[in-house]
Image (cartoon, rainbow, N blue to C red):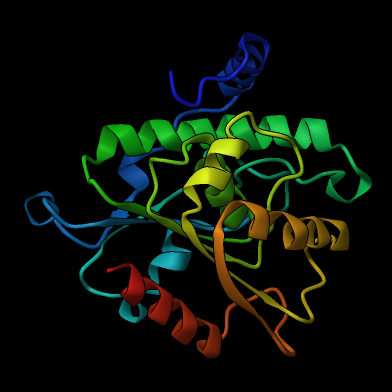
Length: 233
């Protein structure tokens, strides 16, 4: 079937997934009741490390009202004393460990894909992620290039591990917005450099580096995201 992965890769992902709980459907914040969702595009919000579903849901006033918005909670708990939830461990992120990182990112992304398939029958699904959530959004595009209409990546990066369906993504070339701050010292420089090279070869890329912005989101960036989302409609 389209996008099939080698058996060894699928097995490794299954092992990883067995260590990751499914997403908590009861924790999802929706912008519309079930009866109001039919026929509308879905925008899934993916928060960053140590945060929760309430964080990005606060962006709702800045997003086009045509979208049904769903803010989900990451399934893992970071090490004490970090609060909130996480998508994958970040220990050792700046010291290489590409293979282990890629396996963890893929496994938790598979959990996200399971939730989307169960929770929504929307024909058009877009992703908006911040930091870790942006990494997972990009990985979802890579795993199922035909499933998603677009992605917004804020202060994140593309994981360095190879995915068997990357060639299919490069052929589909979905629109992606990537925004980041010039003073963001949270994301390792090597991850940013990889993403700078990787994204233009695989997606229809737009985005911007915001002068003086740290690991955060500014009003200027939100204005650009709104323009991008309006174009998707």
